[in-house]
Image (cartoon, rainbow, N blue to C red; front, top):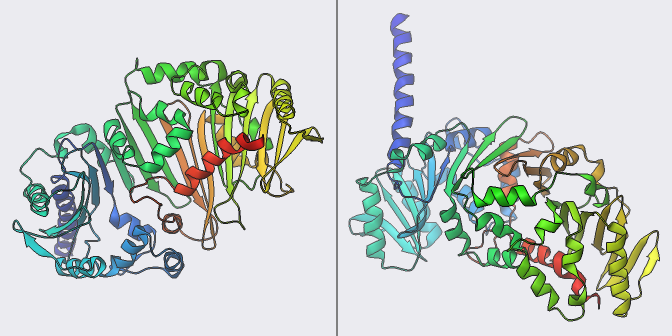
Length: 506
């Protein structure tokens, strides 16, 4: 019996050492100057999403159904290939970003290199070849290379010859340079508890965003985003944990105590307040809010160009937007919902707590009348007609709102939702999203309470495991219109519509 116990202990030790050795081997391929690193606990995700059965990867029917409806998405294609990809289901995968040859790199551990080559060759429509001594395929700025039980997929920052791409990749496989293991802060982050851990320098995030046409469009319409993306925040960490009842995401900004970012936030951010939810229909899928001090808010360098651009718009530019924004003392929110019948159409609501709500509403009414838009006054609301939508402007207990709906509202309000009230009453910056994937309703809620630490939760309806529900939601996201866009193009258009929608009332 003692020999049996000893054998079992040695076996466990060997397995743990093997997994740790493979993970460390991949980490040594990540250069110390990477601008961002993400570790992905593949074994835990597969297990918790019920994709691992007796050591083999199988795709649950409910996930397969969602994937079949969106088979053009890269994630769906990747999961489809998992059972025949020959990946090592006992080791982590890693992704990292650089400003050098490769902008993005994915490292996947393999247990069967031949299976990986066969699957990728079929997916890419071309065979692997040996370039500079490396087995690889170079296609559309992506290098797929396999060596020593590792699949490396790298996207170059700019078009280069395949020989140079292969030589650079080979250098990573040889592990001769300083690796991320020598950067203690990053190493500690990657080894933290959780299925996904990330360390992202702000410079790295900027480099990625600058290549996204959709981000540029969203930033043009919502310049306040640049408070975060163009600040002196040094880096951020992110940890995703898959629990039995939910998934959690915790973020942390690494920033100096006397930074311009913190000074700006302390002077601009107001106390969180969820009272605006009482004017938001509970059918809105997405709700975003930020509590601000209006007078300070309108002085921000990121807001001044928006006010100037607004002033140049024919007719509507005569409305003193800055004066109205200066009355905000609390949350300003945008709520959106896809129209269930009209493709690409959205319903939207804009709401803000104002110190002079009646005056703001009357100002809008007087302006509309001067432009020939004589609104109806019904139940305390100014009612306008715009395209296929009815626009209502009103105020309720200090909250000014503008609703753009193509239906007569009969549903209740988000103010009755306990979880949403809890979120927006505690976080000065927060977002809530409700989506469906198959028969599963999923909810994501995230809030930034102190401008440094943020916390979010993902929950799902029914008996579907949280990890599986999360995969279903991710697999249901349609590919973006631009090849490198990081934000859903339809969503950016909807945000723009919500902001621009009142411009054409004249």
